[in-house]
Amino acid sequence: MNKLEIYQFDHCPFCMKVQRALANTALPLKYVDILQDTQLKEELIECGGKLQVPCLKVSGDEHTLWLYESDDIITYLKNLEDA
Image (cartoon, rainbow, N blue to C red; front, side, top):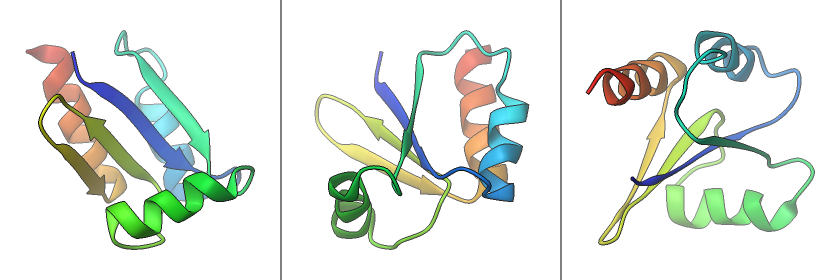
C-alpha cells in the first residue's frame, strides 16, 4: 500500500474537518504538523507546489501524488478504504 501522510497544522478548520471525517478509518494515515517541522513545510512548498493545508501526500513506488482541498482528500481516502 502507498504511504499516506496528511500535512496540516493545529487549529486549521479544514484540517480538523479531514480529521473528523477520517477518525474511524483503518487506513494507515500519518498526520504531520508543518508548523512544528520547517523541513516538512519546505517539502510541501517545493514538492506539492504551494503552502496550503490540508494536503494529502500519497507516496507510491513510482510517483507521489499531492492532493489539496479537504473534500477531495476525504473522498479520495474513503474511496481507497472502500476498495
